[in-house]
Image 1: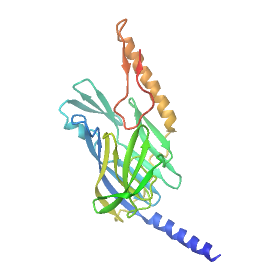
Image 2: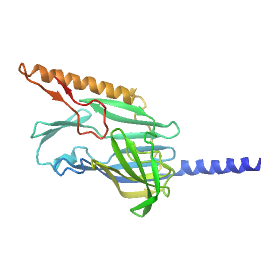
Image 3: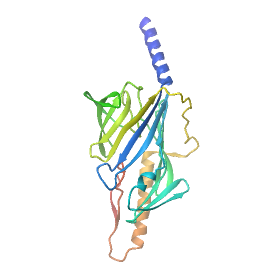
Amino acid sequence: MKHLKILFVTSFLLMSNLNAQNVSITYNVTTNANDEILSLSSEYNLYIKGTKSAYYSNNDDSKPYQDQSFIVNTNKIGEFKEVNSADNHTAYLIQDLFYKDYKENTLIYNELIGTKKVIIKENINLIDWTIHSDSKKKFLEYECIKATGTFRGREYEAYFTPELTLRGGPWKFDGLPGIILAVNSIDGYYNIEPIKIAKNSSDNSDISNVYNNEKLISWDTYKSDFKKWMIKQLKKLKSKSQDGEAGSVEITDRIEDLGIGKLSF
């Protein structure tokens, strides 16, 4: 009975500590990191308070494109921006916002299918990590432990520290016994590094779920709907082609593999 009481007190203190934590981290996020021309970097904020977190782009998502010499123009269209390049490529951008509720084990975030915004709901712990306790590295003043894992077509190495909070991380990276401060994809495409950390700040604002009244879809539904959209683009391409001409559509510049591949006619 004494052991049960000690266990209960320990658990209570652990949950109290979890609910009291308040950590804010600014990251530099780079995609196409190994391509000098296509590489894009921007700042993201991760705010963790208690059992909730929000990870969001810290600036106008189109700003990283302004330094690219081949950009023709950037237009605001409703909730997203259209970026047109000199090589006839068009990108549609929205502000990323990833909301996590650890009590409910839910991750909710926005995505685009063409020019349509959709809201996706997944579980938080998406990656099966292997922890390498003998491999450590410092980021800012915090000593971090290395972990590796594979996620939707890419292998990653992440560095986490138990010194700041019991759990959490940028983007969809989570599920380690400490907060994730840095992530690199082994192929050099994706890179996340911390540039500023503030803990126990005076910001007492709660983290609310901005997607409360939105229609939520699953990751599998998103992939299916995305494929349908690609098939529509393929049909449009075919209708504009001459008899005997071949064509294809393929999504190559994505962090996650949708499992669709190239569609051809």
